[in-house]
Amino acid sequence: MNSLETVARGAALQSAMLSPLFSVASFVVEEYNALPVSIQYSFTDDGSKNTKEIFGKGSMFPLQKTVTFDNKLGDMQLLIKYSPEAKILEGLPYEIAEYKVATGKPQKSAVKGGSKVKFQFKVENNIH
Image (cartoon, rainbow, N blue to C red; front, side, top):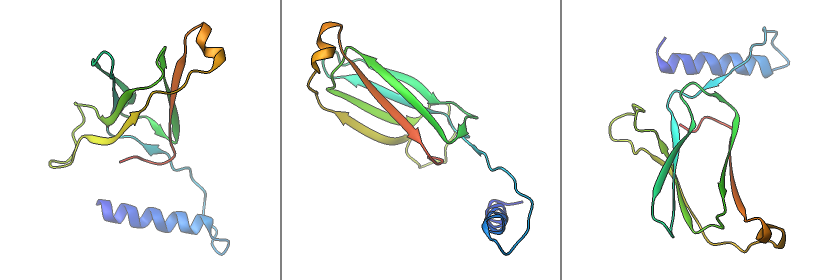
């Protein structure tokens, strides 16, 4: 099947499953991430860039990832992008999203033992 036929048949079957007028066997749709996605982060004070893969090839959707940065209050840049080994279509950018996090105010409870900044990425649907 070509991609257009696959989409059309899938949509028709999903519609029939949701409709009270049709009786079809139910099935589960599991989304599959075909391209690995990574996060590149850098803190303004040291300038170094670090990269971590957050969604590997073959991970299922929906999924939720949490990335924690210890002893940082912000002042950083996050870049969500396809991993270098991902084979995307020629001409498409590897960058998906970019975030700049400003310096935050520490809470009183966080001052004694250092502070942590948590970023939570929740993907409800396929990001491609």
